[in-house]
Image (cartoon, rainbow, N blue to C red; front, side):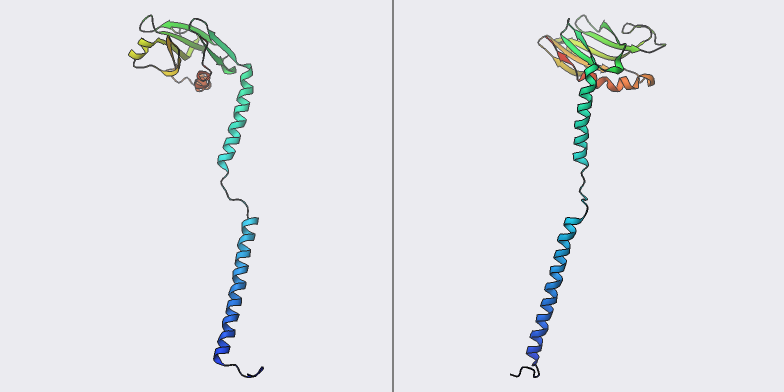
Length: 188
């Protein structure tokens, strides 16, 4: 075989295949290298909204805890419960009434609202925003409209309800009823 002599078809095909494989290998290496580089330098397109919500919720909880430091606690020693009211509830009055029978008592938490007439559940100029119902266990089992459950002890079941009407001037208070209800604690 001559070193610089003519190549046979077989030798020529073998060289062409080697060149093609070399080009393919280089292209593959460049493509893979680009993909790795792109993966490491590309901006993160991951949706991080869930962790941000959790961080905000933690911040809100901390803020809410700080805000509750100035809240006032209502204590009912007759039935053994407390509720805590925030700044929105300044000036509230509590009036009790008997519903259906002597065994069902309701405490109405009312707020100043001009022009509202007096009734069994509120004084003149006060609107009932929150009601806490206290049932005996037997009475609770008989009543259809029980309200939302706050808790119970050996003697009573405690429920609550918000205002019946949506009063524009008291919307913030009406929206805060569930927050106040969440502070309910039994003391007996």
